[in-house]
Amino acid sequence: MNQQYSTIVKEIIAELESRNPFPPLSPTEEWSSRLTARLENYSLGDLFDGFAVTDSEFGECVKSGLLLWNDALDSSHKIVQNIGTKTGNYWHAIMHRRENDYSNAKYWFGRVGKHPIYFELHCYALELSRTEQLEEYTNILESNGEWNAVQFVDWCQAASNSEDRVEAFLKQLQLKELKLLIDFSCKNALI
Image (cartoon, rainbow, N blue to C red):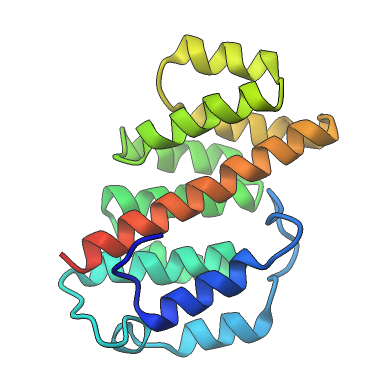
């Protein structure tokens, strides 16, 4: 976890990490309406409590990401739809993927291009696929040689017809993606 998280961000992340099971690939409702209301009411100054936010777009990405982790898709979308950066587009793409708007998610991932978190996400996905003995996914990840966000959209779309262990694998990847992107957004908000 990023050492530069404010006390409030750390508290929210701890609450979100207490979820069991993992966040769904396609939520039908927010996990905690109380947490959504809390996040919606925070200014960036409140959220980053004591830290100087030097890039407000990245700060808004953190807020949007926390809302997305809480399955508050509409609230997340209201923020991120106005952020045209690579990272803002990434959050936008995840939101559409989670609402089952797969073609729109692919469009936004196309606007992302290669993102700095892709390398670590690919390494994690490859290791997890090996650990879970999901040979088909391991082979694809090895063949790609790098993270393919559009491929992940396809996997999430097909998950409704997948075995439970495949869906569990995808949920773990999604959670890692959320955490990496929140960390990246936070670091860049405070540079």
